[in-house]
Amino acid sequence: MARSQARLLVPALIFIPLVVAAVASLGTPLITSVATSFHVSLGSAQWTLTVALLSGALATPVLGRLGAGPHRRATILATLAVVVAGSTLTVLPLPFAWLLAGRAAQGVGLGLMALMMGVARDHLPEERSAVVIALISVVSIIGAGVGYPLAALLAELSGVRAAYGLGLVVTAAALLTAWRSMPEAPEGRSAHVDVAGAVVLATALLLVLFLAGERNLWSRHLAVAAGLAVVAVVLLCVWTVIELRSTTPLVDVRAVRHPAVAGANVAMFVGGIGMYLLLTLITRYAQTPHGAGYGFGLTTFVAGLVLIPFSVLGFVAGKLTPRVRTRIAGPLLLAGSAVVVGGGFALFAAARSDLAELFAAMGVLGLGVGGFSAAMPGVILAVTSTSETSSAMSFNYVVRSVGYSLGSAIGGLFLAAGTGPGHLFPDDSAFTTAALVGIGAMVITTLTSLALARRRSSGTNPYVRSTHPDTGGSMPKGYWVSAYRTISDPEKLAAYNKLAGPAVESAGGRILARGGRVVAHDAGIAERTVLIEFDSFEQAVAAHESAAYQEALVALSDGVERDFRIVEGID
Image (cartoon, rainbow, N blue to C red; front, side, top):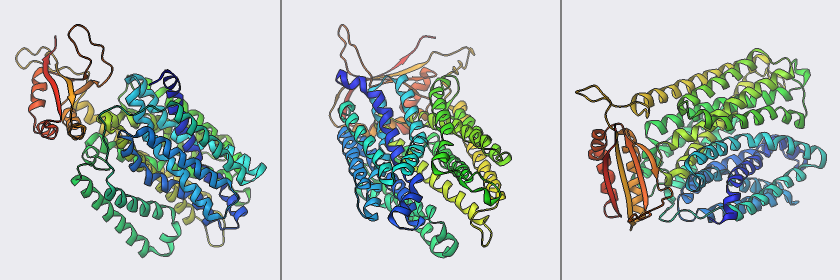
């Protein structure tokens, strides 16, 4: 990278996700203003938020695959250009349909989260990249808390167009920042988009998110909703088969099946439901008028200020989590964060008669969400190759999006069920019932995370030394040392990486160096070097001979020329 790029890189990696998250969330505080300004129903105005979330979920896996290839910089710039164009449509005096089109274009930017993580992992030292990746995950959450009060204030002062004008200004700034700072992807990358897989996945996700957002469909046309749900499940199964058979899958399903990745995604899905459920409950409760017998009747702007503790404490948790991770395993941090969110539910269920108690519950939620979001990438990327960073995290983002959408829908369903005939607002007890459901979701998330931690500690704990079978003393560690002389077929190398990573991890290997900077002296050559540690020399040899790694070697074939050695360490 050029020196000017290097200086701007880390701020850009934080700024761009913050912008696209904040802009995508602009629909939330502006729904009422849009309905009034464009003379449409509140249900129609709700689509200004839903369509952005939909387009983001649909674009994320495709952008993740493109971001894994050689044209990542071009992909980032083109995506931000689409977001700027969409922001322009939201500002121009055009009919409501054009506003929806603009919001859909703005939502595409949500797919950049995983690409920013890929850039950080490729171009920053390992320790710093872990911190930056954690912050990217956090700001993608707290961006809503930043954009909500600002947009609400502008809408109250100058109308809905002014609020969307804020989105145009910051997205243009994000595009300029990306143009100045984003480096090219490392050489030797290749990525082909699986068009068939992309179409099937997009259709399935469209149905899932549509069913999550259309609560009236479930209450009035249950048979139709159930039929569409079955179709969505069938399409997801078809997509899985397509991905398993594809040589260039949209998402590496085999890697996703790895117990650590699968468990993390289950925790993200269930935890996402709970986290967004509490966010929905608190904001709805704050805006409910006093005439309902509870609530505070806050305006949109003041209600947005309730999100400030969420954003501030979420950012603090995101900054602290990478430091804590040096002492506490990532799955345990997920479990602890889930417990914190559960505490937020308990606080909301037990005490919400005072506005300060709502602020406290929102702060506890932010602390838990920030810690959970910051710890999640480390759990997944620990068993993911560098070249697959964008693809793996884009799948996790899709899982998170579906979980958030279901959390919002579940909150709406419980509050609707608690609304008596002829009443505009639900009973106060409906909020308590929904909070208890949220506690259950966080219990499941905690147990899933603890199961991940238990598997990790019993399988590949880097702090446990093997013992000699005869003497009982500690055994010298074993190391794989690979120096890549030439890479003649990047696609074969990519296929090898997909299989080798899980094979090495399941055999107890820990990657210590992978393609980082090399300074060669004497007769040495500055080649791509990979160093993997095992608890014993025998374990290192057995890992090489394992069926899983031999399958990876078949995929690699003659794609590279490398110097591969298994070395015994010093006891």
